[in-house]
Length: 416
Image 1 (cartoon, helix red, strand yellow):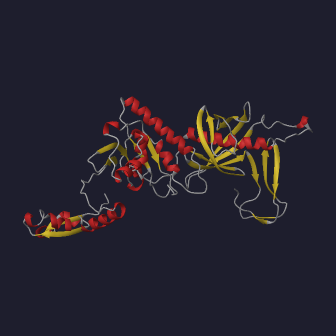
Image 2 (cartoon, one colour):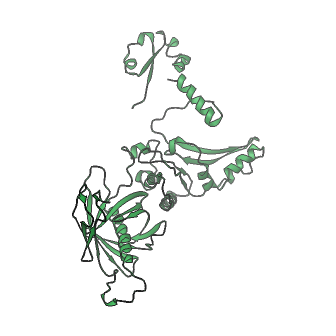
């Protein structure tokens, strides 16, 4: 299991199998068990002295109390905390429990969760009893109302290190059906909160948190302190999309891109040449779309067609022959966009946009999507020396050929 072990033995057992297999071996006495294996002082001095010293120092530093408790080793545990309050007058009460099995680096006591389901200001109560006051509530006055979840957002890279700060508060309800409904509602609320959480310029752990709140095992409650390494044995790779979810991402990314192109073709207060004007909302837009892939995998290319419906905020997008209906307020000035994709709500954020590329957040994970015109003939390759005015690429849009030329002499670079 990768656990460093220390074997204790008597002098006559020095060649025993367990001694040979252990990382370290310590003789604790002579052959009689009373002088070796039953000598607790010698054994502790051998599986615990250094660890005990370090543990006492850590406890004193963190909690100003270096007293140690010996606990039974549990191989596959859950980390459950119980919030208690007590005064100097012999009064004590508990505020139910918290599930902290996948809490970040085994940190303690996320009291806001308990405050959410009890309505009790724990810090205020602690200040009162520290001042010498009696607790002003009794055990039967402690309410338990609903479920609470907490996600702690950190400026850390979840793709490099798994450290999920997520805790849960518990409730006792009248029936399992009711309990299940309340839990799902609380998790859905957390999911929506993470989708609307806007952070720019700082790497953060929201992608991991967002993935966890919809992960099947987590939602079933089947979690232990080993949840993260068991759920993500090769590390967190971001949200893994099935075909339907890929179509969703492509659908709203292309819809946003097509809308931007169409709006760019509208000229306000245009009065001349009305007869030759083509309404950009009545034509089809054809694209080749590439989704990001794992390193070493072949790029996925999708043929996509976008057509506007009744207005600029309704589009039918066809992805490799599959239809995706997208509607909603697509104003890119908004920090978050809530759209309907095939009549289901989807929240996204536009992280970055540049020519031929848009980066969107979906399920908390950023996806850099290339959206290119269906026809694009590139006439140079990376490393070629080009001269001023040389034709670089010909793109087809709305059945018209558009030629792009070099503005000055330079070496051709990787296109973006």
